[in-house]
Length: 290
Image (cartoon, rainbow, N blue to C red; front, side):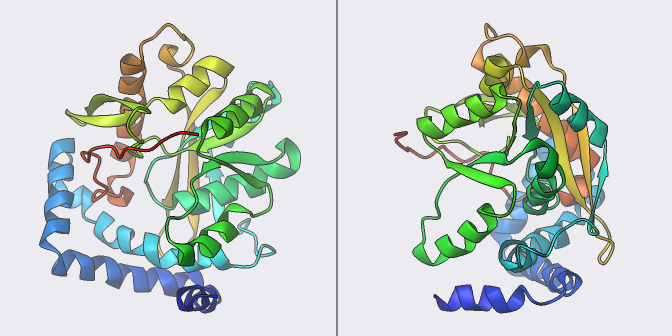
């Protein structure tokens, strides 16, 4: 076991509010010492047309994302989230699942998306089965064991980010199952198109829209809001009934516009928890898909 893994395991025993308070300090430390970080953060907020005062809490929130990871990834599988996470809009998810339509959880880099995924699997798994998600193995060997523990929790099942993995998602959704997708993640070259996001073209995934078009699954906008320290989280769910998600003849570019519009809506609801320094403008990497 690597030294980092050992440190993560020790930190996982600390109360989550302690780690969140540490994260606040970490977030502001990075802000103060990194001019490039401040530049990207401010540029993205400005491009979105959101007053900086509304986005300012995201400085601390970004640090909390990192500080929460040992607890999120390494805590015991018997330590559940029932008392920590409340749900808003849960009926949208349940009605789609009970109708056998399947659900695509559309959850961008807002709040604690890692806790959100685990909370959804934990709450709905006993009735609706495992949530199946795409998982790219960590590039660093020391990180592999940490991430693997987070991806193998009860009712959370992962499949590789390959054509085979995508086919698994399609079968899952057609069978009335559910998955979660990070819609604002920059995909590899060839797996996306250029589409506007807060007024500028960014490379946007085509996967989410294609899954919806091919399976008829209900897309649900979801974000896991981090409440004041010590008060847990609130996971918000809202259906996104875009015609572009139902019509396979719609071009990938048109569908990507709708995906980005959905992310924009969620960001405007919680600008103080969005990961503003995530580089949506970056060029996609080249990656083969086996």
